[in-house]
Image (cartoon, rainbow, N blue to C red; front, top):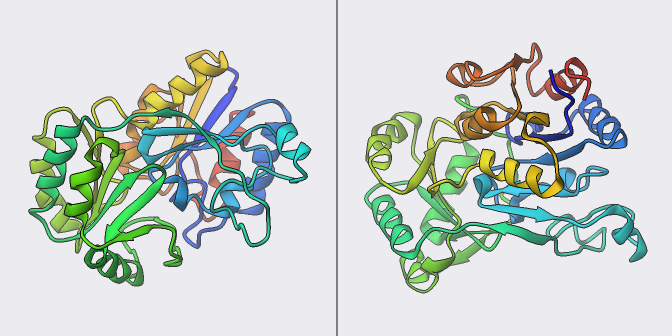
Length: 306
């Protein structure tokens, strides 16, 4: 195995346990890797606004890939933050009541072409579910989608390892998403709909796969996520590696689900969690013996000497 110099970690089902925590062993493994000069970052389907504080505040974590690779953020160096009197990289929405926050710099942003965004939105309108539109690091929903998402969060997710999160308001509610889209179609980074169940999502998938000029993935069995063509976690990881002068063979991707597929395929080393989808495990150079609740990431780092 090559020497790992950058490690991108999916959140739900990978870095985060089902209870939305980072295990102490995994936290220590990340700290040790950072101390050795490894760039460790989250690579998530979530928007910046939904990046959990416990992830944003991990010591030494400077970069973040969000919205399935549509954006890459630089949360500034530890030294820069220290000069302003802040003891860690606390980014926007990272528990501002307790820590001074700073807005990270968006160093890569890849949106849909306007007409493609409208086409994708039109297809989503044909289905019932909770639709979220990702724009400028925020999640946009109307009240109906908000209510449906609340019902979704109240269900126990037996089909996925998505972390259980409070409905804590880290999104922007609009009166009507279609009306909002009429003014903002030029700045759409991602669409995501949670369906009533996995069967409904599976039935809708062929319609989305038939779209040209987009990437279609599932972060969990009951959702469908769409970004523009060529926008995925893998291309974002390699773009950041290029920016930092890191050879592609020295990149590590760790994930568990379909929306991690591109970064697992493109990274120098692909690691999949024990709780990962079986079809995703087929892409792995290494599969952990422990799952996201039992230090799976720490195990992978130890086995790869990260």
